[in-house]
Image (cartoon, rainbow, N blue to C red; front, side, top):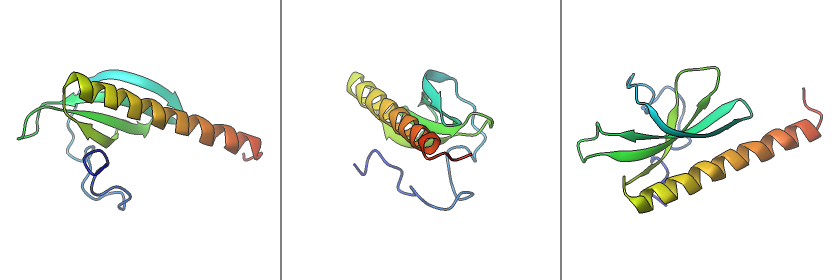
Length: 105
């Protein structure tokens, strides 16, 4: 899994992240929106090693997103990206539902 999750996963915001460089990339797909977040997929061609697929998560109300998974731009990489993106979306759905069930404001 070390090739899927960012090495700085869980680090304090404001440190190096994919949204801090101001790069604008068109989403290949948006998996969905839940609990105030958008989950999607982009292809980033700016890496020195070559193009990569990035699964991202970001607040709906904001422009910035953060990559949570990086995969090769192959058919297999796309299948893995779709699986990861949908798993994240489902996780957000469960969190939102449990939050509502707990009666949180």
